[in-house]
Image (spheres, rainbow, N blue to C red):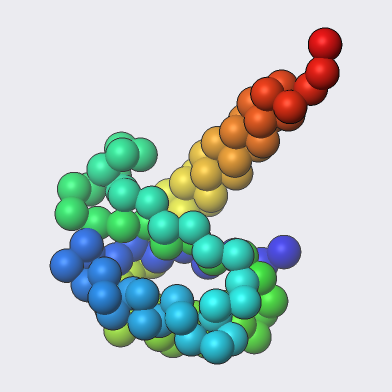
Length: 100
């Protein structure tokens, strides 16, 4: 699955919400995280989108007006960290719901 990562200032949260509510973009997997909570810059949000190439192209055009893409190596590292966190959380929930 294709993905896209942006760094958007917290001050532009309402514009971000509008971009993420776009008909095509809203159907994709979206994760918005406080950048400072993951070691990034304060006052910024990481926006991770996963989905189809056409929807991500649309998201790219919308998000470029309000944020910026991190450098490729940094984006790859952040993407892997976010995926690892999601997998760890899913594994933890599995332990919560198992019967003994």
